[in-house]
Length: 258
Image 1 (cartoon, rainbow, N blue to C red):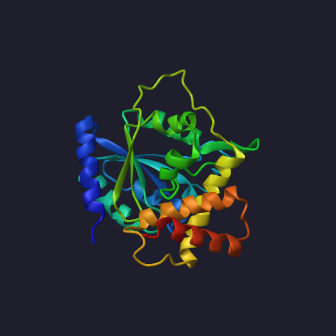
Image 2 (cartoon, rainbow, N blue to C red; image 1 turned 90 degrees about the horizontal axis):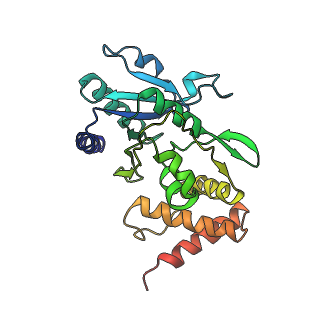
Image 3 (cartoon, rainbow, N blue to C red; image 1 turned 120 degrees about the vertical axis):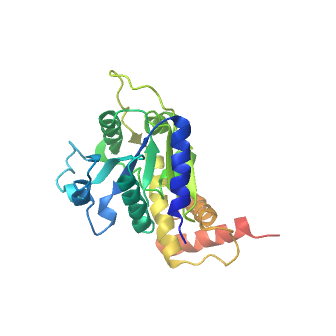
């Protein structure tokens, strides 16, 4: 089934309403077994792109770095390439796309600065473009000021959820100011644990089977398991076997029809 075409149609409609003729795509190269960089040099209308690790210590293997690419929606070659890429990466590393009025250089530099986060005074990479994580950043993990850093430069973010349905998060779409810079995101211990719970939930669902028919879709199932995983963390149930058993019991208890 083609899930990409309806998504692209919605993106095009949203961009028309916003009066922009391009979108910007974050491609997570390290999650797939190929680099998109060679393809970016083959277009008759060159694509603008930049590594989101540019200037960071991690910028040593460009073929593994997340890259921001600007796609011209009026260029059929660009659009077809994006459609094919989105379909190919839908399972392994779904694309995160935004619409922005900012110049490509301004947007790329801002998002690169969002990547460089801190926890306990140590620098680290904030992989906000992971679409498993992205919706929970706004519902459970980041505070209002931290969320703002990801929303300031964009009119919208969009991605395909666990059920391959399009999701959207509206941004602020602020006018860029030369003297304005990213406020570095510093994760508290609690926020870092919430971030790790997303990976724990993915791992849990890889090996555990929630009773059939309990949820109408995979996204609802993932969210319920994630929230149970958060509660397990709060109660300091940390050892895998006990933690997984507790999470399963919690999910069943919270979602059983009485």
